[in-house]
Each structure stands twice: as structure tokens, then as C-alpha cells.
Image (cartoon, rainbow, N blue to C red):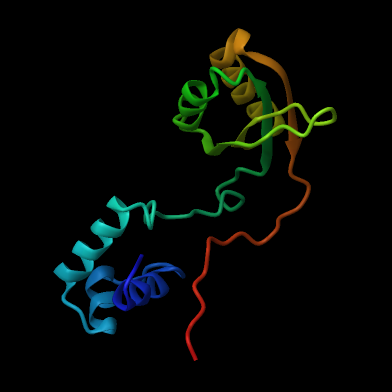
Length: 160
């Protein structure tokens, strides 16, 4: 579990870091903490798995990555953990996860999001994934994005 200070830190960071030369010092100051205490708490939260990472989240559309496809794969259950880790480590896969199949209509259990400047680039990246999956892959498809929806991570409510 997290304590009240950890909860304040998460709330302060969930909207992003302040755009200052020393963002962690600013957050610590705003919360009445020492910067070293804030960094220690963040490291502990990460070690415990409460937070996974703090990272930049660029807008891929503004970077010219306007073709987006969720690649879906039917991968042998015995191989999915090992192969999913390989797919998730690819530099062009933004997120990768396993989901249960919904048979008979939906045989896919491995999902990997791929972005590109056009569909040809996305298809080339999908071919790279297919090569890694090899014979462990029994079926595949791709679902292209048709519109942008707002994406956010979990947000803790402010008390009050």
C-alpha cells in the first residue's frame, strides 16, 4: 500500500512533470519535501511496482507517425510469454500485452501497437513481428486506427 505522502507524489506527477530546469526539485518544493526524499520515494514506488516508469509521452501524430495499427496474433500458449517479451522489446512497439481469446470469433491472444508514417511502414514492422513469431503464430490481423481518442493513465482523484 501507499501512504499519504506517496499518494500526494503520484497526484503531483500524474499530469506530467513541470517544464522547469529542475522538475523534481520543483515537485518536491511544492509538496514540502526534500528533492532527495522525493527521488527515494519514487525509486521505492518503482521497486514495489506501484509505478512502472516516468517517461516522456510524445504525440506520435505530431511526430509524423499518422498510421497506427494494433497488430493481433494467435500465438501458442506455451510460447507467448517468451515471444511477447521479444515483441514488446522491439523499438517500434509502443505497447504489447496478452489477452484471453474470445473463441470462436476472436482467436488472438497477443496484441502489439505499431506506429508509422504510412501503412507501408506499419506493414513492414508487422512483417518483422511475424518473422520473430514464426511457426508459433497461427493467425494474425491488424486493426488500423480511424480516429484519435483521448488517452490517459490512471488518475487519482483529489480529496475534497
